[in-house]
Structures are given as structure tokens and as C-alpha cells.
Length: 405
Image (cartoon, rainbow, N blue to C red; front, top):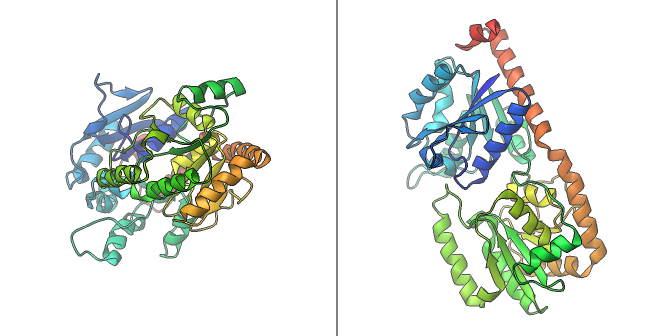
């Protein structure tokens, strides 16, 4: 099976959807599929390499406007792709609605289309466009695609309530899982000037409004009033490549840092290789992830924290996450409640048994989100979709070619 992924971002661009696409592409190829990726020109490598390992990468899209409608069927034919699979998050396509209307047009060209929603946030259309219209445009592809995938149960249920069938397949960690020995952990902390008895709170992810960085800083400010030697390690790059609001939000974060006088307590690691990120996650005492929309399995940062056995404090999810239980894998606090966040961090820091239990259980539950299993479920969805198309008498332009193989 040959799958053509379409994604608004792909490494070296910074962004969760791009990192996810690379990981699922690798896992699918290991499962026997052929993978090509069409993405933005900004993902072009300096050496103009056409392959990311054995994955063919085509950084050919200058603008995600109406030109993508004829472009992608032509590319799919040239590659003999069995189906086109769009990885969708509104911000990754520059807020342009062309990609939302593409599946129906592509199907008229004989293309089979799969669609993954990384969120259902209503897209921006134009000034004064109402939420109802924006939501309709966001969900329109789900009414057209041959198969629809969500990364969370909440998004799947939201589509089901609209009469749209979807399959939930969670994401995995795009950061490698590692475990540091006691001496390695001490050495990792020392490179930032941290002592063993310092309280090191970690944060992982880009700065944007949904990540709750302002609440994070408020919690650190409160911790300073309760405990000496509190440090905040900001792991990873500050801004992703897709969301234009990140720059304005980062200015608010800088202003908050100055307001509370936290500059000397905060270290920014910047972008690092995966192994370095994993090592820093292991080096923290507590990882605080104050998502403004609550914890979710769509969050790659949360999945990386689980995979690396972090003691996690995060915000209560909008819908229950059956895999993650309060007090077993992590601690929850109310969204926006910085005082509760600070108290939860201290609870973990002062209770070694609790911290060890959270760390061990986080590693255990992360095994449920193995990329090999995620790839297998994708292949099952693809196969079922292509079989339905043949039974319904609507074979793709590549049906004869597939049978000959």
C-alpha cells in the first residue's frame, strides 16, 4: 500500500503535527507500507535531500490555497498512491479553507481520502464569521472523506453527535523514551547548575495560549513564597512554525517573567535532539503542564512526559481519559488555578513515594501508545476503506493497478 500524506508542517519545521507525521510514517513503513509526504516548502532540507530515511518528502507547497485542489490528484497519480491522507490542524494550513473542501473534489477525480483531526477547533474564515459557520467548515471534510480518524475519544464523540463515523487512534510520543541512572540524572541537573535538593519544575512545549504558560509562571511565583531554590526548566523550542499568535503570546510571557522577577530562575534549553529532550525530562522533579483546555491524549508533550516517566501535574481533561487516573499516573488541577498547581507540585516534591509511583505508572501506561500498534490500526482502517470503495462500485483510479500488483 502506498500512502501520500499531506501535512502543513514537517521536520525540520517545529510543530506537533509535523513530528507526528514523521513518526507514523516511519512506523507504517516498518509495517510494510510505502510512504510519501507532501508538505510546505519551509520543510525543505538545506542539502535538498528528497528522503527522510526511506520516506519520500516533497516540500513543494508554497501556499495552502485553492491551488492544492488540482495539485494533489496529479501528484497522487504520478506516485501511484492508493490514498491521500491529510493530517489536519487548522493553524498548520495558514487558516485557509481550501484544504477543507479538497476531499470532495479529490474524490471526483478518483482519489480515496483519509483524514485525521488533531483537533476540532473552529478555523478562522473572515472577520465576523460566526462560530457555527467556522465549525461547519472545520467538520466539512469529515462528511466527505472515505475514512476519518481522531486522536481523542472526545473528538470522535463530537463527530458521532453530528452523525459522522470516525475511528479513534491515539498519538504516541515523538520523543524517545529513556531512563537515567542516579548518577546520570545528577550530572544532567548539574549542567544547568541545579543541586540534588533543588526543586526543578519542568515545562515542555511551545509557547501558545493553549499551553497555559502564564499560569505556569504564576505557579512558580507562588512556589517561591513557599520554598527556597525553585527552578523552572523550559524544555524545547519556544515557538512552533504554524500558529501566528505564538509571537504575541511569547511577549506576554516575557512580560510576566519580568513582572515576577523570575529571569534568574528560568533556563531555556532551545531546540534539542530527542535524546537531549528525554534526558531533561528525566532530570526534572515535577513536570507542570497547565493546558488551558485540559489534558488530552492529543498532546505530544504529555505523551513524551509519560514515556519518560515524569511525575506530572496537569489540568483536568474536558472529557475523562480512561487510561490516566488521578493519583495513579498523574495529578490533576483545575484549569487556570495556579494556586492549586503550586500545591500539587509541592505535594509531589515532598512525597517521594508518591513521586516514584507516578513515575513508574507513567512509564507503564505509555506502552499502550506504541507506534507499532498505532501503525497497525491505521493499516486496518486503510484496508477497510479501500475494500468498501470496491464493494460500493467506486474503485479508485488505481484499483486496477493494485489488483495487478
